[in-house]
Image 1 (tube, rainbow, N blue to C red):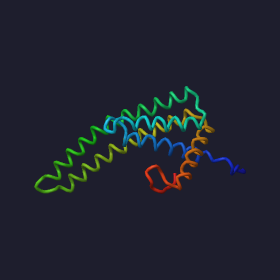
Image 2 (cartoon, rainbow, N blue to C red):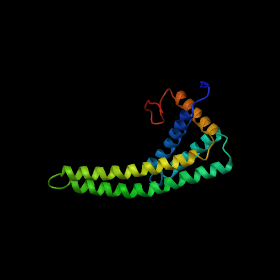
Image 3 (spheres, one colour):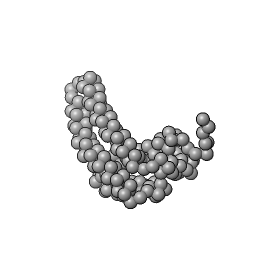
Image 4 (cartoon, helix red, strand yellow):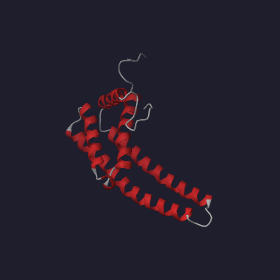
Length: 165
């Protein structure tokens, strides 16, 4: 079977969309919400809409994807605040004890990592759900836009570090 090398593979299209939506979703987890004045949520919405413009997404698709991403963001924001408070309180208690208990600190870290893994699992589920709202051609268009943006930035991600997606 011959492959048309001018058209990105399905895997590239999915990985591109996954990377694009991951950037938005992870950034929303990390920077969204009231502690940053709520402005970052507007920026992420702008970026999602910009990607959906490139994909020529319908209003119905935009509404579905926005609802999916909003839901996972709101849930993660609530959990992040609670998790952050518990992590800080636990770390302060352990680090101010007369003797620092390495095993207890490792257990706290492990618990925090487990919560982060659960959030990332939910985020992956949401990304797959959002990707399935779009056609393959739309996902390819988004992947191409992300590749072009990455190349325009000299191979640098938004945070300034080099890497591939």
